[in-house]
Length: 400
View 1 (tube, rainbow, N blue to C red):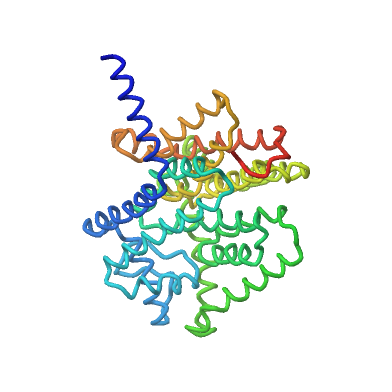
View 2: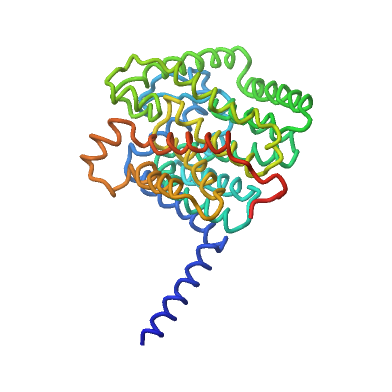
């Protein structure tokens, strides 16, 4: 009987392993999650407020009114660039629920595709899918574009890695003109082979995306909206740097809220962070290593979020994708500190907003002190240490 039990356990484990490595099954999950979240949020009324903000950027652009004002159709304000009104246009044409579902689906599948392009063996790519699944769910419940921003950053890296610089520049500038975060794709500039051409491509796409909304709405109106976009982002930065904001889930937010000092400047943190972020670039010989370059992708994804006081809980699909890539890059046997940091990130970053914790604990500790950012800060610091001191394998061309 014990032998039978052992055989059954072994068979069950093999079946589950096969199932969780089945790409069709994983793809079905990335389709199911948007279906669940869009149905749930649509039927709970104000929970799909972000989607209303998005589609009304299209309607307001058509009416030539401010894209960045407060309107009775929704709470809060739009903070995306004028180009976004064209991105959201196809979804705004559909009935609200259908548009919302296809918006969520597009975000999920775009991220699925981007992860698939990573230069990793299939099992490691599958591991990234599963690690980020819960954080993707969090982003989808908020109807956010952050899964697509994550996809843009990842694809910017993989296109640079494949020497497809024209399209890499396209994605970087597309992300920049939508939500500014996309500009971090320029972090991969040092890995570009033909730098003058790449710069020319960036200029070309900047002109295209800057002028494209003008073809539909006129140059005077769009130029005014660019000015209002700048003012709205500036105001948002000040608004976020408080002790009660739902945003500012960042390194600065942790320090601000733990010390109770809302006037704490971002500048010292940003200067220190940028210096640490750039130090590994000095290791030019390590550029040959795909693991080193992928570490920079992971570092970029995390840095983008933990040093932004606009970061909120749904933004962490960006950072947690970085955490996933960092973890699967670790050589075996995996160091205890790496395992501890990864478990810490799962418990506090990914599950910090879930029912694993009581509402009282979430509100009074995790949210109040921006603790969702804490594991990502520790991981980013440890990753930076690895990138500065570790000797990466320069001979292999793919990560096994």
